Length: 117
Image (cartoon, rainbow, N blue to C red; front, side, top):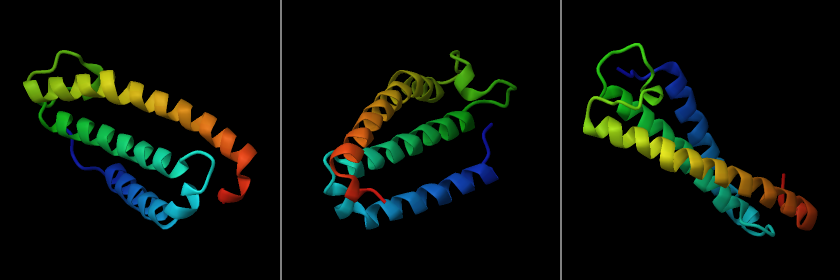
């Protein structure tokens, strides 16, 4: 069963800081040639959603040595839904979104470098 760890606390603190920083720079990043503010916000949302699925899915699973995301045969409906949501929606979306963001960042550096720190 998943327990709240020090890594979870550190990740929550880092994500909170990153989101606050993003909100403070929202208008400056909105002036870029590509919407880096939206890209960052969606990236953070995908990371938070991924960790939420892992944490809730792990808590709904009986204590076993396997990791929640490494076993497709989940014992209940909620862990099954969270497992498949993670692998079929969140992971591909994050991969696509990261690739898109890499192209956007290159475009911003070439066209509007003044909007980057």
